[in-house]
Image (cartoon, one colour):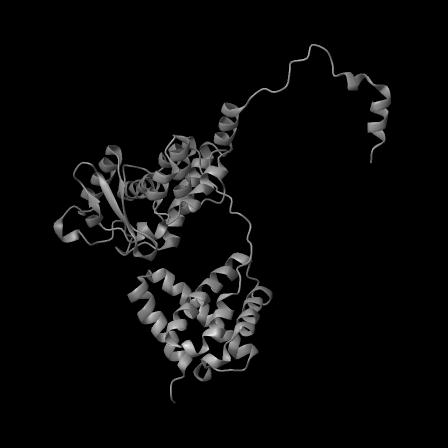
Amino acid sequence: MKPTDFSKSLTDFLSLYLPGEKGFSHNTIASYKDTFILFLSFMKERKIIEANYLTLKQVDQETVLEFLDWLQKERGCGNATRNARLAAIHSFFRYLQYRHPAQLYEWQRILAIPIKKTARPVVNYVTLDGMKLLLMQPDQSTAKGKRDLALLSLMYDSGARIQEMIDLTPACINFNRPYTIKLTGKGNKQRIVPLMEKQMELLRDYMACNKLLEPYASMYPMFSNGRMGKFTRMGITLILKKYAAKARNSDPTLLPENITPHHMRHSKAMHLLQSGVNLVYIRDFLGHSSISTTEVYARADSKLKREALEKAYTNVVEKQTQGSPWLEDAELLDWLKRLK
């Protein structure tokens, strides 16, 4: 069977354009693949078009809108998931504009589909006291306890994403002053993050116990599971939840019930902000592409908001030695009471 223009375009987009020209990470490309697996399922179920017969002419704005509605109505996806799927579709049709310009008008109609508004995310974070309590839980007399403390403390101190921790190798650590760690984030973007002396002591101890300081181990996973393989997201999450549960036994008020690895990143960002670190530096520390992403932490910190308002407050109301005259007016009070 002769390949269709849709299959050829999608294959080149996923296997050549995204990893080669755009430099997207494996996880991002996997997410895009999932979007088009769903789209092909939709076309088969609703349009009765098999994947091997689908052509570019059969895909238009109305079809994409139907697919997005199908995601929400049939699969129960929320606005955030719909927007993520639409972002993948938009990326594909931006690519097609230069490969199949004869249908440029239709591609631009698809690119004009707007994202839906989503609720502003709430930043959940652990207080400094809660973080100290959490990091007191691993048993330092065991190899596993040393590993877990090194893992959790480094995740917090570096503000790393969970995938950045999974991909970390000993070669990413700079043991010369000033101590730093190289993290590879979204889109394979790399950043250098400083590490403190105490964190380096923990890392050295852990790495020495596991022979990770040897030259031959430079590309080994920094943190590995019982089978000496890379941790999974679920594996790191379970470690965090185990120690969070132990910490809640000591003080149930300091750690949330549903804690995730991203809480560690949020917590570091909030603690830096509360210490007076400029948002621009926090943006670079976290590897955000835009300061607007980092501003969510400033919006979330009610303590800083209150302090800023108190500093800017000007008393414009004269101090009164007597009660307000209108409060002594019985007719006015009766009128107010009758208001509905």
